[in-house]
Length: 260
Ligand SMILES: Nc1ncnc2c1ncn2[C@@H]1O[C@H](COP(=O)(O)OP(=O)(O)O)[C@@H](O)[C@H]1O
Ligand SMILES: [Mg+2]
Image 1 (cartoon, protein in one colour):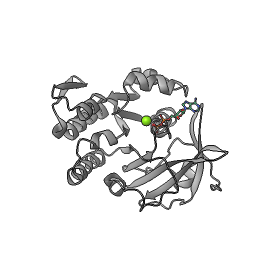
Image 2 (cartoon, rainbow, N blue to C red):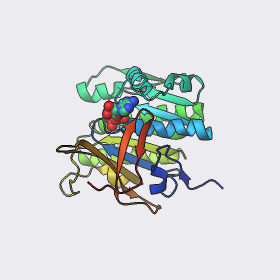
Image 3 (cartoon, protein in one colour):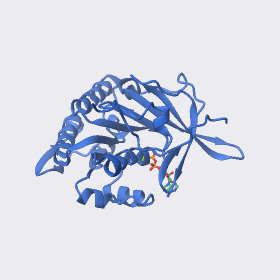
């Protein structure tokens, strides 16, 4: 029988999660700009390919493929190579962001395995996105999916109720795929914020697990980064803040507690 946990690919993190992310679920990684959300989520997919022969679909809603390939080359990750071998599908869905930003009415097309999916406006985006992801997942035979980040998508639904429904639709879709899934979202950068000081977005309530990448600016020490497992259903997990760093190999977590 398959383990109930899927290794995260992040050194140090599996120990805090009782073995990894809960299989078949949707985990949210939230943090400020540059905190390592894209790195961490791609690392999950690459580790899947390299150690377990598991394939992945990465949906980029913010960065173009070109930028992503360039940035991740910093970590020695040759995404183009993985893509050519059909081990990873990198889906550039960044045009979706243009719709929400500029409210463009013109039609955009995203190609997904010979099947064109038309995206006309915000109201169709979750459905269209789901179709695109489903096609890529089938073609790649992927068992892992990342959507990075879902923040831009939810800007299309300024009404909190609509946004909640859209988020539920997207998460339900991911759950229906039977894959293990990561979604990322942008968050403010101060840590030490109590939950009452920041508005908790719907996705944090709706996802099975939430991992927060905190960045704090401490005088004399510069930026200090710490990872927190805010929640992880069905899992006995660590609840402390743990320092993490980004090196030339990607993200890694220290297993000792954060002492400030
Ligand atoms: N080779 C490297 N060594 C150390 N840090 C790096 C390296 N390459 C990129 N970084 C840093 O890693 C971070 C990348 O973060 P990213 O995953 O893009 O964050 P997010 O998606 O949360 O905005 C940036 O802060 C960048 O400066
Ligand atoms: Mg990013």
